Length: 227
Image (cartoon, rainbow, N blue to C red):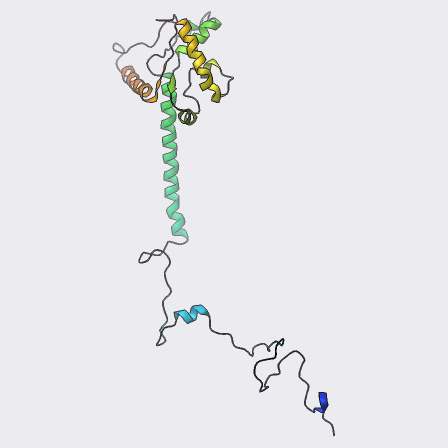
């Protein structure tokens, strides 16, 4: 009497699914192209676990990151907490240096020796020519290289700045030689010196202006050229 299911080629056992290796089969590895059944092949141990194992069963401790022999780098809130004071200190230092630089450039353009402070009555009946003379005598230039003028925002050309308010600042250094030629032609002073000399003159004038009224020199002068 035939079995419950006839196999291929007259076999009487149950048929194995196609494309799979039957569990319990005494054969070796599955044939080429066949997929082993799930769970029948054990995975090898991980690489990290094998490397941490030592002879005798002792586990190797995990290696600390950072410099050899040094403490591990801070993590989380410690790193963020340490960066905040440094960022604040950097911001305050930048503001301080910027304010000192701006003070030096502005004062060197308005306060050194040779600049004049005018009284309100000097402006009465002022002609266009006298207006140019007042702008010229109330300011000073700072000589320097092109990178220096860029760092000052071209305010080192403080004489040309009020004379030509609509001129782009980068063109001040091109117009400065023409202004100097006009001053030589009409005998007008053109106050232009290096940064060190101008700043030294500013410091000296501040000291003089801090003296009592009887010893304080006057910066008010006439608009007449040469006086």
